[in-house]
Image 1 (cartoon, rainbow, N blue to C red):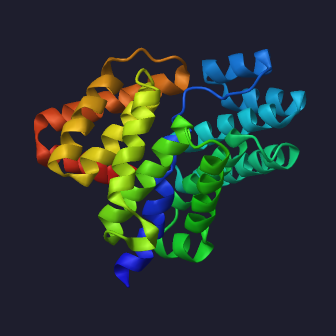
Image 2: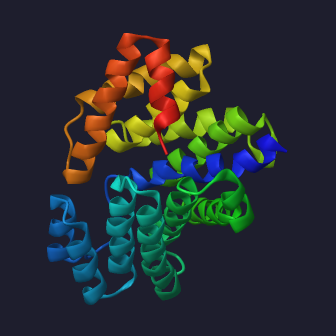
Length: 258
């Protein structure tokens, strides 16, 4: 029963990979809102994007608030912030059900909330299943979307690692393949590189470790494109220091991640 209750929290934290995506694919983003996002002014970016309206801008608003939730250290505040992001994401989906980013940001919102709950509360809330359903829909809309692939890959690896292979339909082989596809599609993406490093090194198998170390080197060396990437790269550097220090420090770093 312990593993059953712990697994959903692992599932939903795994979808952070999608959140680490570097850009939203829309034709006409609101320039002012996007500039605010790049600078790290997430609340202001969300307000400007929501005011501009349209599915793409509502998805940007959700992404900005999700960024704020991810960086928040207080669990209760992070949950509330992610709930705000979910409202924007749901509005984006309602406005355009075919927009992949809307489904991804909704999944991320559920993930961020569940990651800051106790395992039992996360299980009872159903956030894991909701996030998985949204990710599956995103992949149905775009099977080659790097963000959806990396997110799904993380989900498969984390569930397999924590709850046992095959649990909740997880498949570590699929996870490895999806991470490889995401990295191949976006080799210069610092955010996907960091997420790949974290999940692959956590899985702790020889082949996974080799690829994880390579991804971590990329996350440390690539040039950040915005304020959020700079914050993620700072974490990557701390992670690299832990890896260099030894397995004990490495495992402690991994364990401390939400």
